[in-house]
Amino acid sequence: MKKHIYVYSPSGAVRDKAAFRRGIKRLKALGHEVEVDTDALSSHMRFAGDDDTRLASIARAAASGADVALISRGGYGLTRILDRIDYSAVAKAIEGGTQFVGISDFTAFQLALLAKTGSISWAGPALCEGFGAEPVPDDIMEDCFNDLLLGQGEGAGWRLPPASRTLQPEATPLQELEIHNATLWGGNLAVLVSLIGTPYFPKISGGILFLEDIAEPPYRIERMLSQLLHAGVLARQKAVLMGQFTQFKLTPHDKGFNLKTINAWLQNQISAPVLANLPYGHVQTKVLLPVGAKVDLVTQGRDALMAWGHLHG
Image (cartoon, rainbow, N blue to C red; front, side):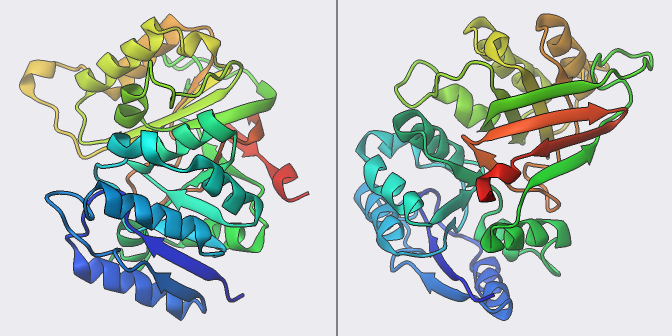
C-alpha cells in the first residue's frame, strides 16, 4: 500500500524539528512516498513563512497529485490568508483524488473550502503531533489514516458518558437517537467561532456539528458556545458532538464550573442532542472525520456510531 503523501506547512512554523523528522520517518516506514514541500520548514515570525510563501505551499499541495496533502502542524496563520486561497484549485485536486488532512488551525481552511466549494476534507492528524509522537504514533489514529488511504474508512464509533443525551447530574436512561443524511462539519471551536459573519463560515442547517479545543478553560469554551448559540448556529443543527477539550487548568475561582457544567448548560439551551466523548481533538487517540460529508448518526444505550461508508460506495 504505497501512497504519495505531500507534507506542507500552511500555518505555524515548525519548532519541533525532531517531531517533524520522526513523522517523516514513520510515514516512510509504513511504505509511503513522502514528498516534503520546499518551504515546509520555513519560518517568518510565528508563521511557516510569510503569507505569500504559505499560499504558494497550498498551491503546490493542490498541484502535487498526491494521495494525501498533510499539514505539518497547526498553530495560527490560515485565517489571515483565507481571502487569497485558490479554492477552485483545491476542489479540483480533491476531485482528482487528493485528500486534504489536518487539525486545529486547519479548521479555517476546511470550513472556508466547504463554504466556497462544498468539497470534503478530513479532520485528522498533523504530521508532527500525530506521526511524530513519542514513543510511537497512536494505533487507532494510524489505523484510521490507513483506512483513508485505502478508501476503506466507513465511520467512527465511541462510548458515551452516562446520561450523555440529557447531561444532567443524575443518571437517566439514554434514548436511542437516529439521524440520517446530515452534513458533518466543525473542528476547533476557537477557529470556527472566529469565522462567524465572514464568507468562510458554512451556512449549514440540519447538520451535525463537532467541536474540540486545546488550552481553553471552561468559561472561555462556554463563551464561544454562547456566540454560536446567539448567532443561531446551534439551533439549526440536528446534533452537537463534543470532542476532546484538553490542556486547560481549573482554578479555585471556578468552584465546580467545569466541562460537565458546560455540557449540561448547552443541552438545556438547544433541543438537539449534545453527545460527548467524541474521540477527536488534540489527543493522540483520534479518529478521522470527513468535513462536509453526509453522515448517519445512531446511538443505542451508551454506544454511538457515525457512518459515512457511502463515500467509498
